[in-house]
Image 1: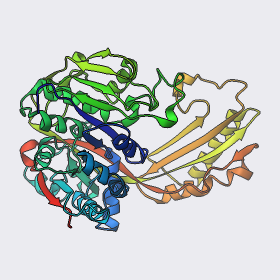
Image 2 (image 1 turned 45 degrees about the horizontal axis):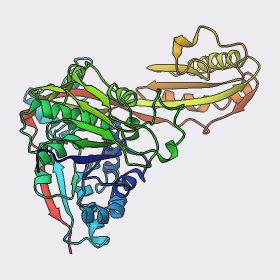
Image 3 (image 1 turned 90 degrees about the vertical axis):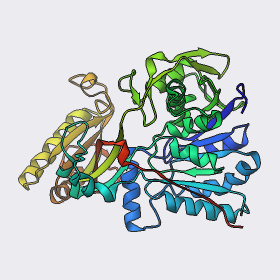
Image 4 (image 1 turned 180 degrees about the horizontal axis):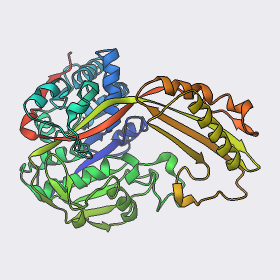
Length: 460
């Protein structure tokens, strides 16, 4: 690739459940070279692990497979490469399903699928613990042995290396599990431009590009506090596209004729999303210093990003662990004018008294008044506005055992006829008792994680 050549990396999914037509639009409404699809969040891994527990063939983003059936013919004919973490906890199953889908749509022998493994360490936790890897909770310092018997998923965040290798082996589609979100964008940059694994500044620039791309339309006007009132075309919002150059600089844009907006202000919002110390945005491949980012508007829906500095990667990888942490339920009632909050407070008092009378003890019980203080908490003021027309009482409970939560579930509905007046809505019937899956972030020596890669061609 020539020094001045630009590659276009399009974002097509920001989370599992994002708009299904977004990747189709990215492929068909203009030129792109790569399509990245981000499906995973911390809780998503535990959901997928439960699905796989019920059916060993599952455990990945199932809507990814028919999507590939729709866009793979376009990708093959246009030379577009797809990089996705849709594999969840079963990348092999996902990859096999994509290969079968490629054969079904007439691409036998013409589509290559790379499957990346090695991030799932669930079956290794006991052995790792015995060898001295405490996998301490990064927030509390507790060792994983405290909850080891309740762990349901454990996945290390792996970086760009295996994605780059898959692209070098001409994979049309790269299916990964818990790779870091940003690598879905910067791995194609490392591959296309031949960057060294120690080219910290360029990789850091790619990390910034990945952070912009990873949440989909949030970087092109969606969920934007600075732009939402001015945008009247979000029904056709265009997802972001990174136009990357070999020196690490890039332009963020979107397809012509699509809705939304790419601007310095909108991108600044996205850059601050889920940001801790801006000087240390840590990934498996480098540390990016977000205080060095420079943004320049270059015209309508074009922002140039440059100046990014990076530092060497750490010797540790982050591990996302989920474990069973009891049971929960939440119930709601809507009270109408007059004095809706006063009525809701009395209903809350009655409910708690009835629960106490039945001996139902909880690790936590939380009450919110939606329409007054559920969003802003204490900032909403000590008392509600006098003219508040309605409020939704929302009560949630959590306990280590199921029984008290079931008692709570039975006591919400009776308040309709045995509590304060003007209940106007009972949302969803009796509250559903659900198992709580809690998040346990930890670190592990990167030498313990060995990613695997298999690249296969669809059968003719």
